[in-house]
Length: 380
Image 1 (cartoon, one colour):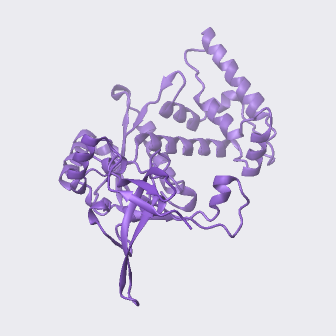
Image 2 (image 1 turned 180 degrees about the horizontal axis):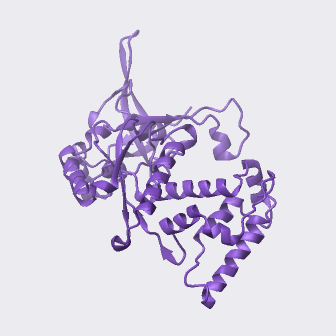
Image 3 (image 1 turned 90 degrees about the horizontal axis):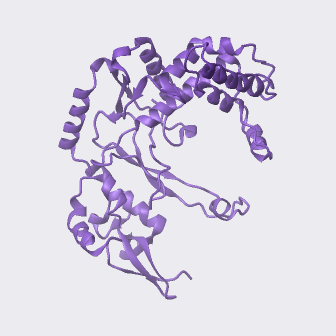
């Protein structure tokens, strides 16, 4: 029999003075980020065997229509998180103020001012919008007591896509495009696992290409430092990439020389857009914000079927209990605005800007952004 839970009503795991403020203001708080970070309904739980710990708890009513009875139950930990996040639960919560109601936690007037400032700062010809085709999970890997996070503005709690994530996606698309031109293969997962298991870990061809693209090569050919950099780059290109058996495993030996590689328009654009170890990139990627925030948050569920296998290294057998995990995501059909700009306004290169914009669009459409893209999420 599981130990009986007795929850002492503490409401929040916070210092006493902060807890008083939380009890007063949490029900009306309009900052979703603050609620997820600080105002979760944690209680001090005591068990029949004498154990005491803080845990996420939630009391709810279950109605048995056949017997016409109502029973009060306590949800704990993962189950409690589900009740707290999913305000549309079929069971009735005993205290509605403890339910998150995430779409009620945005100040729409404040967001309009926030968006107007963005619209006024960035030139219109460098702004474009795209609509999400699937649900979007941004920031799922961030640490927190809810296990799966969500990216929200630090001060206002509004949802957004970080510019660093957009730059990373665009850079990945550019690497794959150059790899396709050169015939550099994206080796299968089994080969990658084999490489990781070796004593001398060997990078994959795509990792070597990534390394090449960011190696410095500054100055003029007459400079000694330039020749040193060129020699180091030649070593990586020829010894590691061109003569790599993994690169030639599909019969596509790279026929390019280092000079021809560096002369490729895509390579020149890539190094200019994203920079190298010795120079910053020419294009800046800014945070992307939604066009509106009305009803933007939805509740998603992921159900691992082999919990013991992932936690305790046991065999993935069918008798293990599935464990649904509830988390927040952005719904599909939302228009996000994207801004790119030149780092140096006096040396603005419109062709470079257009290439970065095209690569970002294609990356958003073909790869997706955020978490669970392999399941089709994050596509625009």
